Every structure is written in C-alpha cells, then in structure tokens.
Length: 292
Image (cartoon, rainbow, N blue to C red; front, side, top):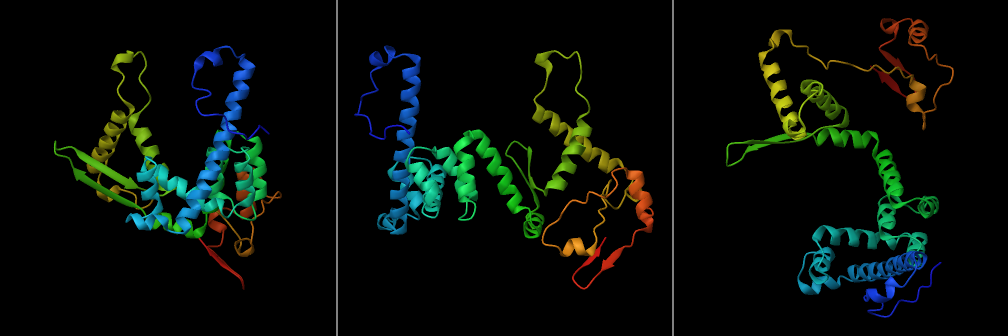
C-alpha cells in the first residue's frame, strides 16, 4: 500500500517540478495521491457520521445534517445527502470502512457498496470491490440491488406506483409524465418503435431529426390509430400473453431449481403436457394453490 503520510500543502501546485518527472513517476504519484484522497474522505465521512449522530446540525436551525453539510461545505444538496447516507452506512460496515481508510477503496466504490452491503455479504462484496474497476462494481451492484428488490412485495409496489399525468405549458404544448411497470413499459416502447418504423436510408445527416422528436411523432401516430380504430373490434386483453405452468410444490418451495428433464423442443413440451387446452387451470395441494 502507498505511504499514507500526507504531502506538504502546495507541494504539487508548481508544474515546474512535475515536468521533470518521468511518466512512471507521474503515474505513481497520481495513484498515491488518490489513496491519500480516499483515506482523507473516509476520515471526513466518519466525522460527519459522528456529527450527525450527535445532531450537531440542529444547533444551526437546519432541517438535517445534509442541509448543514451543503451549507457549510459548499456542496450540492444531492451530494450532501449522498455523503450522509454513506457515512451512516460506514458505521455498520467495519471491513469496508477499514479498507476505505487505508486507501484501498475509492469513494465511488464505497458509495456503491453502501447501497447493498450487509453484515453477511460485506466480506464477499469487499473482495469483489478490490479487484473490479469502479464501473464494473457499479454495474454489478446495480444488478444485485435489482435482484434484491425483485420480490412479490416489490412487484406489487411497482404496480401501485403507476401513474400518468400531464399539464399544458404556457406556449400551449402538452407535457406528459408517466411511470409504468417493467413489462408495461416494454410494451409501450415496442409500440413506439413499431410506429417509428425503420430508419430511412440515403438521408442527409443535416436532415436527421432528433430521436426525441421521432418518438413524439410515433406517440401521436399511436393516438391517431387508436382513435381511428373501431372500439367494437378492439381486443379486450394484451396483444400477447405468456403462460407459465408451475406445479404447487414448486410454488411452495423456498427456492426454484431449473428442471433439466424438461424437453427443450416446444413441440415436445406441447405433447408432454397434452396441449395448452389440456392443462388444468388450477392445481391444489396442502401447502399452496396455483391458478392461471
């Protein structure tokens, strides 16, 4: 690990000395100072955590520690909230805190780990963080966080948080804002892509329109098609439906294991099940009831 002794103030401001350094020396000093910055940031965040726990910010009449930090340290409110969140999590993650304080982890990595790490997963995630780049770790944590949220309760919450709102701007333009579940959002995007049509060839680069304008035209096209269609002939359900056959024992199990004996050929699956119409619409057991 690099020497943790902090350099003298102003030592690296003068570029005259740095120009005499070789590229290897420059690279070493850049990485060395990065480790110093990480160690100092860890110390700074632990002071914030202590200040927040003792509610020192309340004496200034502000709403929270993040408000105080934004004011006193001249950072944006969003960055201040991020720092306070990470500082609180560091008090619960001793292994990550120790690696951060030694300069082994950057703030970017610690911020990502703080979103998902627990007492049980801290060791494994720390080992991954030591060998992954910041971008790789961020992508991994994002996927891991999404997997943790993929539960029945999360799906129900996502369904309940759906909305569609609009308002008129002063110039008469209509602004839309919406939130959909993942499958409904994919359906809307597929419809928009179909309405846009394939990209035109042999079109001058200056005539290419902004992609957002193209999507806006596609949305209007979908609205016109919907109004022009006969309501009586409009299907009642979604244009496609995925039917999944699951037995009651699988639903009652704590974990789902992929079946290796199930045929991969769709025709074989249909023959084995006796066709979709031959499948029972419900399956009951003492533990669970599955229905289509």
